[in-house]
Length: 118
Image (cartoon, rainbow, N blue to C red; front, side, top):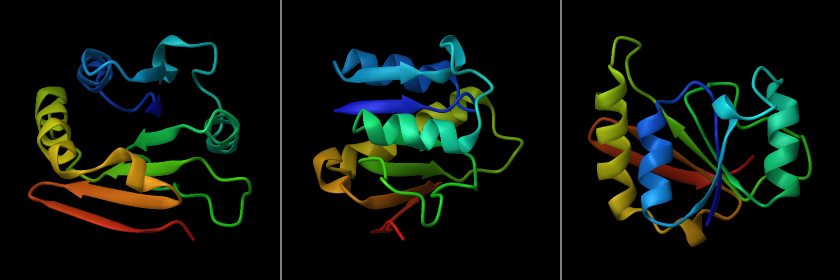
């Protein structure tokens, strides 16, 4: 699968997805660092990527085309990078990425909700 990792996430998520041999665009280490949500949304849509973020402004309602899907990680602000990475690693064990087409998955400690993109 192809992923776009927002710069608000720990590098451990990038490392984990790369270890699983996924195609990963790490915004924190790209020339898109600091870009608007709309630019990242469009980039993910153009490249058929799943956006992974903590940013509550995703999904962007009504902006078409949409990316392949969105994974929104909802954890308390005081969570450490290692905690966020561990929650992500555990949660994705039960997510089939190819089934995220046109969907948003919300990951929080001990819970995953998947619903259609608006």
